[in-house]
Image (cartoon, rainbow, N blue to C red; front, side):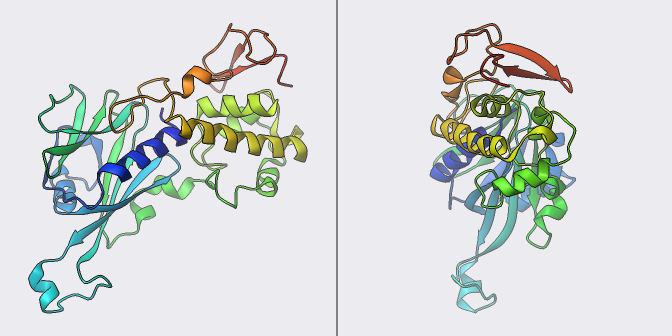
Amino acid sequence: MPELPEVETVRLGLNRVSLNQPVRGGEVRLARSIAYPELADNFLAGVVGTQVRCWHRRGKYLLGELQRPLPLEAIAHDIVEQPSGEVQAAGWLGVHLRMTGQLLWVDQAEAVQTHCRVRLFFDQGRELRYVDQRTFGRLWWVPPSEPLEGVMTGLQRLGPEPFAEDFSVAYLTAALKGRQRPIKNALLDQRLVAGIGNIYADEALFMSGIRPKVVCDRLGKQRIARLRDAILQVLTTSIESGGTTFSDFRDVHGTNGNYGGVAWVYDREGEPCRVCGSKIARLKLAGRSAHYCPQCQR
């Protein structure tokens, strides 16, 4: 599943290629890929004719801030009042990639992928395609009259962003205090911190020297401070690498990232630790794999 660095990589790519260009049309090839509105035709009616002012990210969600150019006659006769006098808010285009979702910026002439679920057509023969083999991902059009978190309810359950000021050592210390669950499981809880999944939880725990099974309440402030710093470091490194090479992740141009080649422990069971040479071990926690170095992590 794409995690924060992969989603951030897609966001940055979309902001480079797709802003302020009108959506001229679209096609929903799999209706269940649309989470809201209920009817795919209503989704297209809401999105077609808009422009994306900016792409944002919250946790693993992509949020396209939509605007709609005003008709010239509306501007001329002051029918609406807008600061710019040229556009009005048109809601949000929300995307969650889930396990295998991809957003690809391609030429319309390019052959349509077998697992393409949604197409949005832009000028100059370009289009944005949502491709999803496992079909777990979802798209939303949230009208401007409705609250974003009221429609995309998963946003309500997200903890702080890792790079935000409120993701502090004090916050993390208080959030982990009294918890009797393994720290690896806690890091996968999006209510604790938004955007971290299996890959970067393993990597951050290695960099902070903490074993995945250590109970949260046993971590002192010093180790928690190291963990927070490691989270920021590993996420920054992965974003700079364009995301991971693992699984089905692709950026908007169809290229996967470079992080996987330098992973410390994730998916490296039996291989030598890059620090001490010990064999990387793997265990199961709540049905998920956890990779670690028995020597470097305590």
